[in-house]
Image (cartoon, rainbow, N blue to C red; front, side):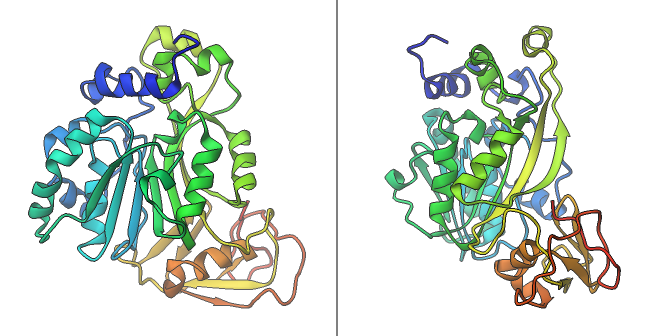
Length: 349
């Protein structure tokens, strides 16, 4: 990569020309090994092999309860996740797929109408747009117009990540959700590694240092993001392994909400949340994040932020929350999860 070559040019070349399909990848950073829910598998069975073969994702960033939503898929590529989301939101919903690699979008567009027909839809509910995820306004995506933003191993490819997250917050409706998977690293990479063409293409050169990510999210207004899951990244190429040295990479799935009343630490207001078991395909439990599993009918002490996440979002109709913020009891005890009648609360950190 020369000084005159932009990150965007490197990425477009890698995904538009270098990679023919997922088997050409040199690491598992852009591969998804998660167990796919049965309902998702049924929808993916309707997706053409040409689309599936060009899928480069590091997770399955698809939350539940999507019927009728407007969903924005950042870096949709050949459309695999967009077509999955299309089936989940249903004919009343809408999916907008954004990517700046024309070769990938050409594949997605070619299969759009036939996929809608396979789902039994009168017309496609997917709209593919070619452009930069850093400038969604240029693509006609208005303020507070989207219920959910997803992205699958793409934000690391941007050289202006703060603008990406600022745009995400702008287009989300109040109470809207960001749910994405991406590659993270345990340190800041040297500039030479961060601009290496292969590392960039493999989603590692632009990996977010976890602490810089935390600071970035607070700056743009996502003061409390939640980790859903973590997965180690393996490197199958000795040359790349030698190049990155001791840097440790992992894929992480992240959830955040556009909520105005979140605080930068967990605060205790004596609130209790009870999951009603009404989210489709989640009859027995609902996982808010990697340390909040709500069991149907079981009250749980929660901090003010967690209470807001399950009360002031689309999940609110599936929870009963008692208590408000009229009385403050200090910082919330993050020593571990606890039922409502225990002395300590559930960890929110």
